[in-house]
Image 1 (cartoon, rainbow, N blue to C red):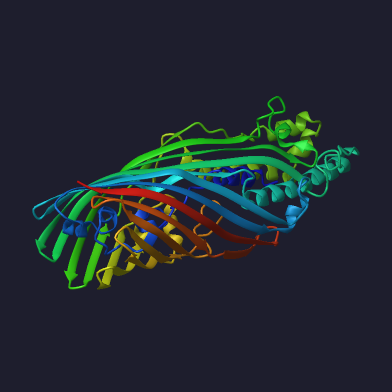
Image 2 (image 1 turned 90 degrees about the vertical axis):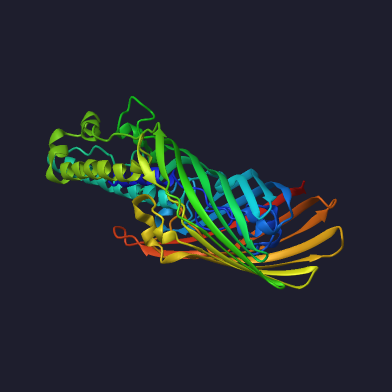
Length: 508
C-alpha cells in the first residue's frame, strides 16, 4: 500500500505556483500598456522606458513625466492526462482526464515617473514585476489522481493478502477485499481543491545621464517584496467502500485529510544598468538586470495525517495480531510508515513553518533596435535572455532546464494622424524545457504573443494608451512508464492568456 506516495504527492500538488504574465519564468515584462500594444519597446524612447529602456528616457524633454497603467489579465492552465487506472475512479470511469486551472489578475497597476533636469533623468517605478494574481484548481491535478489510483490498487492487494493469510492461519476470512469493503479492483474516490496567490511587488529608483546628445547611460536598483499564499486540501479519500480515515483514526473523520496553508514572504534587490545610443534614424539600446537573490520565509499552519497507528487500527478491526506481525504484513506496514515520513518531509519541506527557501529572480539581458524610415513610422525589434539556470530555486530545480529563456520581439507604430497612433507587435518566448522539468505542479510552455492598440493624443501633454494582447501557447507532451505499474502515463500541457490594458501618460 503506497499511502506515503498518495499523501506526499497531495501536498506537492497543492503547491503549484503562479506563472509570469509575460516574459520569463518568474518575470513580468508587461510593465506598461505601451508594451501591450507593441510588444517591442526595448529601444523605444518614451516614459515606458523606465522599465524597458531606462537610458533612453534621458532623451525626453525637460520636466516631469508620469505614466499610470492598469491591466487586467486572464489565464487558463490546461492539462490532459491518460492513465489506465483512472478507469477505477468511482465518479469518472474514463481513462482520460482534463484538468484546468484559472489564473486571474484583475488589477495589475504600474506607476512610472521621471524628472529630466539638464543632462540627468531621475526615475522611479512601482509595479508588480512577478506573479500578480491567483490560480485555482477546483478538481486537483492528474499527478495526484494517478497516485490515488495506484494507492487504491495497492490497498486492495494488501486487503486480499490479509484475507488469504488470516484464512490460512485461522480458517476465517475477514472479508477486507469484499465489494462492501476495499474491493478487488482498486476503485477509489476523493475530493481536492487548490489555490495559490503570488505577488512580487517592486519599487525602483535610478538615474540616467546624457553623456553626449546621442549617448546616455543608466544605473538603478529595484527592490522586490515577494508575498505568496498556498491553500488547499485533500479530503474524503475512499478505497472501495472504506473511508481512508477509518484506517488511521476512526474517531476523527479528518484524520486522513491533508491541508496546506502557507504564507511566504521575502525581499530582494536588483541592480540595473542600461545604455542608449542614437545614430541618425536608428536607436540602439541595452539593459542588464542582475540576479535578484530572494529567500522566502514560511509562516504555515499545515495538517498532515499520521499513519503510525495503522497496525493497531487493523488489530482493532479484528485482524489477528499474528497476521499483522507476520513478516509479509509487518514488513509492508513498516515500509509504509518509513517511506511516508521520509517522503512527507521531502514534499512538505518547502512549506514547513519558519523555513527559508530559495526563490531567485533570474538576471535579464535585453537588446533593442529602432529604425524610423520617416518621422511618423517606427520599427522595433528586441532580444531578451533570462539566465534561468543561474537563479537558485528550491532543490535546484533550475538544473533541470536545458538553458535560459530566449525571447525575440518585433513591432511597429504609425502616427496615423495628429490624434491617433496605431501599433502592433509580436513576441516569441522559448523556454529551455526538458522532459524532467515538466510536471503539472509547475510548468511553462513556449509561446507566441501578439498585441495591438492605440495611443490617443488628447493634448500636447496628455496621451492615452489602449491595448490588448494574447498569448498563443504550444502544447508540450510527455510520456512516461510507471516503474511499479508498468503502465504508460501521458500528459499534455498548454495555456491561454488574454490581457486588456489602459494607461495615461502626462507631461508636466
